[in-house]
Image (cartoon, rainbow, N blue to C red; front, side):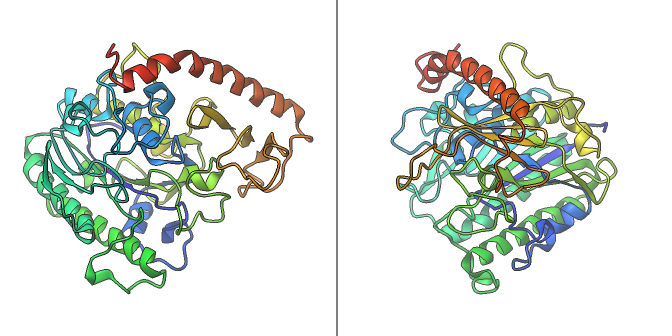
Length: 417
């Protein structure tokens, strides 16, 4: 791929791997997101770096494991920690390369002024600083509260309107980056009246079909402005579904490091640059977006810190990664699982089952090519693979443990370097 694209990254909150028609859903109707898949690529093995909101989003925006960022758990409005000024975020990378940057939607990376999106690379921001089940629910524009009585049913339309209005203003001045981080379908579910009762999937389905409609509105505006071929559009989720939603048959859900909690839908369209109708089984992670988009923008990834993401532009073009690498999945500071090629090793888990001897069956080794539902433990059949992945896990755990004090101090604002 070549050229500097406009970039639109749409992230749903708790959308399941199997919630889209193009991912096999037979109940919910998502024709506009399906069209993104048909006109571009589906990455069937895209992972969030965590099974919950804050660490997943920290990794997405920094290209680093959330443990390195010091944000391994979900933040609430009482926490004083947040995204450190030490981190060099995706919007900062792009802004330094000449992009106009804007975010609309859920932030969830801290509530102090030094944590605000506008302090971390976004020229403009409007949205909720936290999940919609955390109180107070307040709508921010820039760095000011503009509404303390938020009509959550109007948020999906409002965020989309703001993204479209920004694109209308920004596109003539050079490339732009829009991070559209929808509040839905996180619970409590809210949907505008036009979509209430329309879906065969109940209220959750109404919400997803409403999101799909507004994705279509944004795509239509890009086309109306003649920007369709110049814009990379990506659609994904921050982690698996919670109380409702489909994992597409994968085991587990949000909170779990089984596949249903961490594997997320990912669709991307860039006409003429991403071939249409491609389905890829390359194993990738949302933190790969920072080095990938930096490369497309002609920007530089910082060399003074570990960056865990890799450039997956070749994958988006229908190719493959040059080397196989391991992905590590934590609950807070505890390493739960390792993905390496077709293999997935589970060493720990959350939530822990109080009704059985926890860990009695661990470790577990699954062949995800044969058994994507993580049903049959093969550790006794493949002791060499078990040993290799156990060694990778021990090495990476030691690396993270050595950085923990510094990462926590940065997130708490005790140090900035």
